[in-house]
Each structure stands twice: as structure tokens, then as C-alpha cells.
Image (cartoon, rainbow, N blue to C red):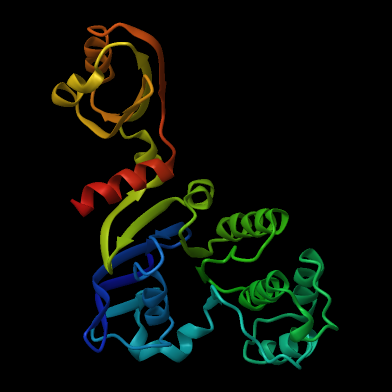
Length: 294
């Protein structure tokens, strides 16, 4: 079953583009990455899914129920961590969490207290006394307190130190084992590579592609660096190459194609040194963005 299905979702702010015909299918129990640079349309998409704003066109289904018809019911199934956290400055963490818990029948006091201990949250403090990272930790507890079936995370690691980031990732992995679906928006590709099963790439308000992380990493891309006294420029005309750079005797490029063809062409040069590596997810996406921009 699809935990989340978005079809032809479109949002304009006056004449300005928000997103255009966004289509997504997130399967129940997976961690799904939603990737793109700032301004690509990630937050707009999430706000539409949460019905914080309304689309010009398109439909959203959560657990196969239309959000327009079952919005109130579905809110109890969703936990949300915003990218930027703002609370009433004079309210204590304890009062805020107790107040929030009243909205959910499934929120248990003992579970909320456990989460606060795990994240080392001082519940007696007022929000004006908290750092950005501690505010984000409270937002995480708020999102998890009612044990939702769908977690929607918009840049959730902003402001968190590495130890707390790792704790959050471990919690998300445990939630997935329980069947919880995670929709994870980020521009930090290393996070997505560690955590997600599939990923959608959004740019300028449009989905460019949706792939399994494993399939992306298995693509026949290679990072090639070599040192030669000869002119390596001839490689550009005989190989499938991106991001070709050559200076101070060192040449680098991204190669996609059969590794045998690469070795054959390199053998025609007097190569003094050679490195061939698998690219990171970040390098794959940067290369793909450049290709789409042409």
C-alpha cells in the first residue's frame, strides 16, 4: 500500500512558480528521500501535504485516503518536523508538550518522558532559553509523541550536533522496523545515502527522477583522475565524459560507460599515475543537475 501518493501537484504563488505537476509514490514502511537545492520546491510540497497551504491543482492521498476528504482523521497519523522551529518564547517545554499531547489519544506520558531523556531535554526551561538545536529536539519529540504511521521531516538535522543526528537516525530506523513510513526532505546527500531506500530529485519545482539508492550507486559512473605528460583532451571526443578538467598535469572527469573501453583509450596515452573511484551520491546528483541544466 502507498503511504503517500501525490499526483500532478501544482502550486503557484501569484505568477511565481512553487511546484509543477509533482508526482510521488511513497510505499508504506520505507524511508523516502526528497532531495533538491534550496528553493527547489521541497518545503512547498511538504506544506501542501500537511494542508498548511492549498494547491492550484492535483491530489494527495495518505494511506489511500484523499487528504481533502479525510484531512482531520489523517492528521492523527502524521508526525511533522519543520525545518525552522518557532515556539512561544515564555512557555516551558513541559507545558508545551503536555498541551500538544492533548490533541492525540495515542500520546503516552511515559513515552514522551523517555524521548525527552533520550534527547537530554530540560523540560523546565522556557523556549527563549533554548538554543536552535534544543528547539529542534523538542520538535522531534512533538513529532514522535503520538506514534504516527507517517513521519514528514523537512531538513530535520538543521541545528543538531552530530551525536543527536545519529540518535535521530537510529530512532528513524527503529520506527521503520515497526512499519512507520518516513518522508525525508534534505539537501545533505550524505544523510540520504545513509538512511533512505529511495529518493526523488526535485529541481525548479519539477521532479527530475525517482530512483532506489542502490540503483543510483550502481550506475556505471566512475571518477577518473590521471597524470600524463601528453594532451588528454583527445579523450573528450572518444569517451562518454562529464566535468572534464585538466590543469598542472592532472586531469579529472566523470566517466560513464564500459570500464574496458576506458582502459583501452587510456592505454593510448603515456599515463604516469591513475585513480579510478566510485562516485558518491553527491557527485552523481551534481553531475545530473549539470546535465539537466544544459
